[in-house]
Length: 361
Image 1 (cartoon, one colour):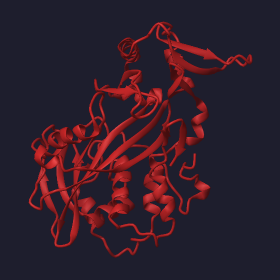
Image 2 (cartoon, rainbow, N blue to C red; image 1 turned 90 degrees about the vertical axis):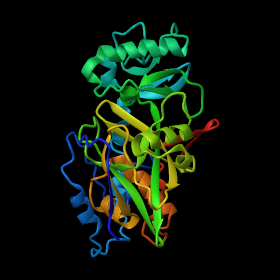
Image 3 (cartoon, helix red, strand yellow; image 1 turned 60 degrees about the vertical axis):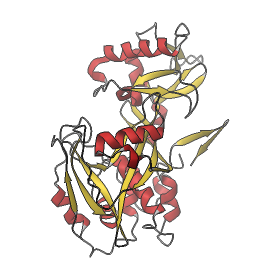
Image 4 (tube, rainbow, N blue to C red; image 1 turned 60 degrees about the horizontal axis):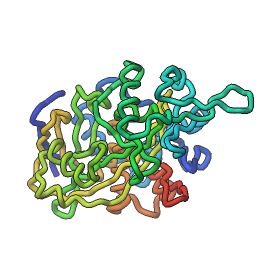
């Protein structure tokens, strides 16, 4: 069946380190995220997607590599110390980054080890910062003072908690979250269509002027979870902005679980949880980007999207995890495949707090 096209309104342009490499059934690479516009076209992606003669459908190694690319640097966890508020750990800060915030005495308390080694034990906020508003303002001023040390400022605040759903201690600029090791949350939606017994995914290609991952393939709808908004309301908002999906349709999006990953690169400790949604769209639906962040869309058979994930690095890395989860749930990856359970488990490598216990899933 021919691939369907939709142009955007604007054409701008751990039990995991993956169960550790020695427990992998397949080798994994750890390529760094791209720093420039992706050098591929839709024609390139669709050519790879439609090549069905390789006989690699049951080979999960390509999927493992994508999970690994989101879970780098776990051997460097010792370079970070705990960041706590009101005696609760909310993040982790690199020892090198601490040198850049050390002089902000009115904001941070840097606690040294008392064994005479002159090493940092942990970082906390000054007790004089008593309210979430005070803390948000104080840390916001620090981030502004650090300038280009934290690139890509978005003026979008993330809530800082000890775990999901717990009280908010303060709000933090989204771009700064990895530098403080804050656990961040987002929503990703698989928008799919069924035609003649076959399933298709709507895939977006990011604008070439996006600050992050320009020109790469992406979900139809995805976004970070800002302070004060529920996951469902965020999905509805993103549906309208990113794909022109009306509320009457987007309210049918179904929550189907979550994936998580932990990635260390330099001073950044990225600890993300993505809440996953599925939305079956009308067969005649065509997306229309409203915010200029998507260059174009394609309607791609699910099996072809799987080929792109296994064989290329065309997708924004964390999108791979959500689509792999979709492949599990819709029967495209089956239990007869070697290392099925290892791959399934690897999609939830982050640590979740349930009650007073910690579970690594």
